[in-house]
Length: 363
Ligand SMILES: [Zn+2]
Image 1 (tube, rainbow, N blue to C red):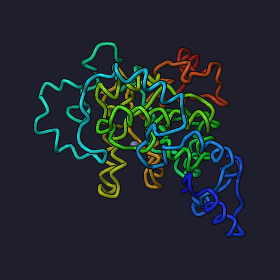
Image 2 (cartoon, helix red, strand yellow):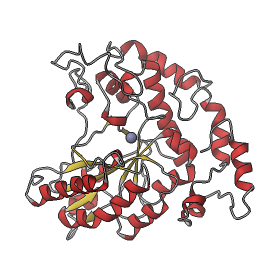
Image 3 (cartoon, helix red, strand yellow):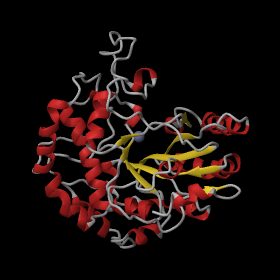
């Protein structure tokens, strides 16, 4: 893993291994499925050049505005007084024992971690996206990437012509920029998943703003597009955090079905397989005949990725459509930048795509 403070060390480590070369394009890295090579830290010149503007937001640390980025500071200062007066909850590691004993049962903050609230109590904040409106659709949403050893998984998605929505963590984008670029280049949709993957409701206004701002900025600077969607780590969001996200032009996205792949190995594989099968069985039973679903999957580790390669053929057989978030919500402009075109069609369908969904992918 490369940190801002250690690009030269990372480069030296890479050069010390004569069999390794320092790739400078995503295609170079996409050619390897050797996890040792894939996960060898490298120094990527454009990322090194970004360091000066990210001062204060060290990768994998909670983002801050103690930075030379005057744009971020000015934007936060213009926003701060309007942010809903909701106190931070618990700790950034997810210990809410200081909050839950006294938190009102009425859930005044629409706190997802409490009772999965997705309809804000404060007016003017959009309801979270949790579903695919199109019936019998599996919205393929994959969190926590880019993972350094994802090439076999991404290769597999290509072989079955399947596109996904990837919720990238800003710190992972800075660690593995070529892998992040591959995601967009191959036609997947990119959303943000914060800078350091903490429980967002625990953070101060400034920290929460910085987590969203710098994850969005990292994706723009490395991948080239400005995402307009984000998913809170662990689903932990309330109206204060939703408000900040909206002010930064980012729609909050949750899910309605969870494979719980992220709990492996605490949960063993048979439990996670059962979760996949249960969602498929519900599709076969007509549960999603009126509206499709967003499903929580992960790029977190080789297990979560290989599970998807095992189950995707069964998912494609059971659901009429398997699509990214933007496609199933008929969102033809997923990024701030207009006119973005994908190199291949986004839609997998069985047996054939509907015309109105096909039109959604001609951006
Ligand atoms: Zn996550």
